[in-house]
Amino acid sequence: MALVKIPDSSGNTVVVRKLKDGRLMPKFDPEVLENVKSLKLREDDVIILAYPKSGTHWLFEIAQMLKLGTTDVPVVSKSDFMIEYVKQDILDAKPLPRILNTHYRFHDLPTDIHTKKPKILYIRRNPKDASVSFYNHTIKLSKYYEYSGQFSDYLRLWVEGVDYGSWFDYVKEYEEVCQNSDLDILSLEYEQLKKDLINEVRKISDFLELERNEELIKDISERCTFSSMHSRKGHLTGLADGQSIMYRKGDVGDWKNWFTVAENEWFDEVYKEKMKDSNLKFVYELK
Image 1 (tube, rainbow, N blue to C red):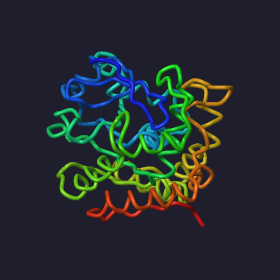
Image 2 (cartoon, rainbow, N blue to C red; image 1 turned 30 degrees about the vertical axis):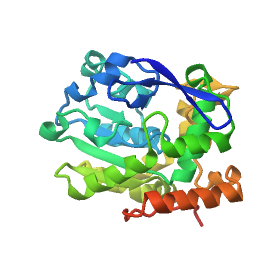
Image 3 (cartoon, helix red, strand yellow; image 1 turned 120 degrees about the vertical axis):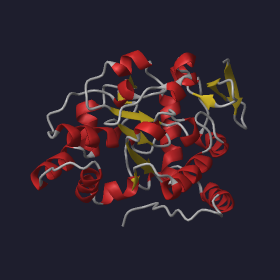
């Protein structure tokens, strides 16, 4: 499972790990990456699924507070519960309830998911903001990715799929899964959480079959705004130039500060072609 360098059109490279089956992943422990399918799950687990930079940290915090029934929760990183990053024996020792998370495609998830059938929270985000966020993530984590290219060059890499593969393939697969699977999945939209967090927290609470009163729902919503999470947890995942690596902006529509007119037109054509068989709709700005 070698490390490989993926070049952009200007010759800058992103360093990622190539698995035996050809998948490109971050430079995590190769043994952990390869053994996700055999991970042992519990029926009372909650699993958060999302393409990178689509709101996993946000959902983790909300789910943790709902499950524990309080906003006074341990300040821990969702990375400590990431199934492609943490070894099974460490995950096995985690206190209940476990809020697990992953960016893996559905067919690469633990086989236990079909027998234990834990609750699954799936969140998706519009691809333009997701690409901008992933670019900044990659730049800030230059120690791991060793990338220093411009967004215009990275965008084309992102469209084809670097680590974790193509966003387009990811969301289309989960679109089908959410429609046809017998698993217990709640599909959420990043932009809707930004627009009406209280209602979305209530929806998640109901899905998890928790009896949480409106006061707690409101308190969780206030504690899980971007600014609140940034101040409380921004340091956990490291800093780059004094700024949190994982908590940058969290805005809807920030892509407009990055895409040129030509890039936006090109991207819209790519989206139209790649998503022609999809019924998904995305929000690119909040009014």
